[in-house]
Structure formats: structure tokens, C-alpha cells
Amino acid sequence: MAKKVAVIIVAHGEAETDGFLDNFSMTRHTLAHASEVMKLPRPLQLLISIMSGLKNRARFAKLRYVSPHNQVTRKQVARIADKLARYRDASGSLSFDVFPAFSVTVPFMEDVIDDTRHYDAQIMLYMSPVDNRLACGSICWFLNDRCEEYDLSGVKIVSRLWRDKGLLAVYLDHIFQHAEQTWKRERDEPVLVLCFHGTLIADAQGNPPLFHTGQQETTVFGETLRALIMKDTRNPFRDVYSAYLNHDVGGTWTSPSLEETLEMLKKEPPKPVALFNAGYFAEGNETILNAMNMLKGSGLSATTYIPCINDAEIFTEFLADRIVSAAEQVIGLKFS
Image (cartoon, rainbow, N blue to C red; front, side, top):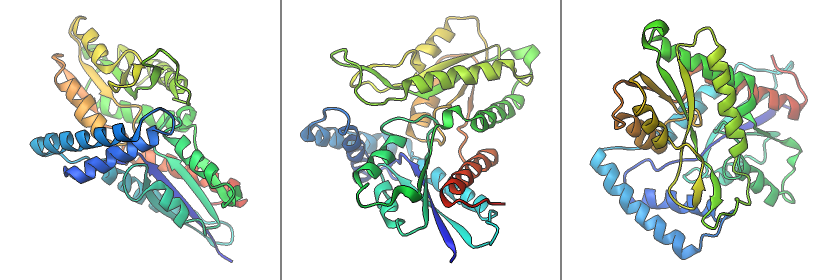
């Protein structure tokens, strides 16, 4: 009998309109997930969701902005599906069906996982390079809650992408491809800022978080990328810095923030500055409205924004290979 593998590509998700209800719902689901690991009373969640919905409605309408995040994710899914269509087991009796899913917008991750339980295997991949409780960990916790209902022998989660040599190679190729179009090393001597999603270091009372934030993995990821970039013969950059996109609530966050890093570079002799959001696989509110706008408004004399990896061909190839490897482990077949 033919075997079918469900591949579920999970991203955070963002509102796809500037409407109040969509943005309210996005924030409400985000806070509901956060409340699983920190104290967020429901009345406070509701108040924040209402304020966020109103704020985003006014801001996005004024900017005529709609987040591309979910659309980019669907393009990633379509490209992955095209790649996986090439793979067949020896009998030719296996197929992959690829589904997009989101943590805080429809279709919700939990619903897609439930709806694909009848498949012979489920391969799940959270679209973030670094694992933490609120990203890849959210899949694990959901499955743990369902462990008595689910046969988990057919489930595999693709994780630890931050330390995968394949992803590091993809990042280097992506960065240098864009750098080659902009600079010649001997003339420009630019610097590169690698931007990551910030993590909570301590709460308002100074206590460390009681959940896995991914802070150590993010630090190692940034240090590894910097070392590989600096020793690569294609490298045009004089130096590489790590910076973080932090939130302004909850306590103490990772340092240096992107604002602090850009301010530091303003005080140094003028030089071209490139920014790459290494902690994000797809453009969205944080990369566009925060990181990109901070770079534009930094006052630095020459800046370049290197786009997220998005649906780049080399990235899609990498993800498809990881998914196939996971399917081989679960199904017990070798694909060609």
C-alpha cells in the first residue's frame, strides 16, 4: 500500500490585513502562547490585544502596509513541495503532502497536526533557525499533551537548524551573493550586522526565565556565523557584529540591541553598514517595520539591507533535504 507523508511547515504567523480584528486575534493568540510560560492574566491579555489591534490598525493603514510574512511562508511551502515531488522510494509508492501552518493565525498549527493524523508519517518543521519553548518547543508541548491520543512513532520534528552546516553554508552564500553586488573589499571595507530575535534574560524582579529561551543557542549561532564569514575568501566585511531585536516589556533582554549597535557604529569613522536578519527565515513586521526602519533612520552615511532568506532556491533545497532525511528515519525507506 502506498505511504503518505504529511510535511507541516510551521511559522509564527502575522495578520494579513490592517484590520482591527485580524491584528487583535494575532496578538491574542501570541499572548495565549506566552501565558503558558509566564504570568499574563487574561484581563491583561485582552487589554493588550485590544490596544495592539487599534495601534496596528492605525499604523498599518497610515503606512499602507500589510505583512508579507504568511505569504512568504506559503511560497516557501510551495517551493518545498516542488522539491519533494522529485523524491521517490524504491517502489515509487510514497508521496509527500506539504502544508503551511501558523502559531497565531489560521490555519493554526494544532488544527493542521490534528487534520493530518491519518498520514503514515508527519514531519514538522518550525521556520526559525533557533529552537525555543515558544517556537519549535510549542510543537513538542502540543504533542506531549496529545501523547495518549497520538501514535508518535510516525512523528519527526526537524530541529537544531542553528548548528546545521547546511544552513550555515546557505547563509554564507546568500550574504556573499548580495555583498558581491554592492562592494569591493579593498575599496569599501563595510561592516555587517547580524540581527537575531532577542530573548528574555531576566524578568522585572531579576529572576531568570523558567523556560527555554534559546539564548545560548542564539549566541553560539551568531559567533559561528561571524567566524565563518571572517575566514571565508569571499568576505568583503571588515568586521561582523551581532545585535538583537528586543521587546520593551517583561524585564531585561539580550544585549546589544540593534539600536545600541547602530548608535555605536555612528560614533566610529564612517563606513558602509550592511544588516542581515539572521534570526529570521522570512520578512515580517519585525524585520521590515523594526530592523529595516531602524537602519534607514540610523543616520549612518551608507547602509544596505540584505533581505531574509525567504524562498531562495538554495534555502528550499536545504529544507527539502532535511525533510527527506527525517522521513527516511520515520518510514525506514531510502529515497532517491
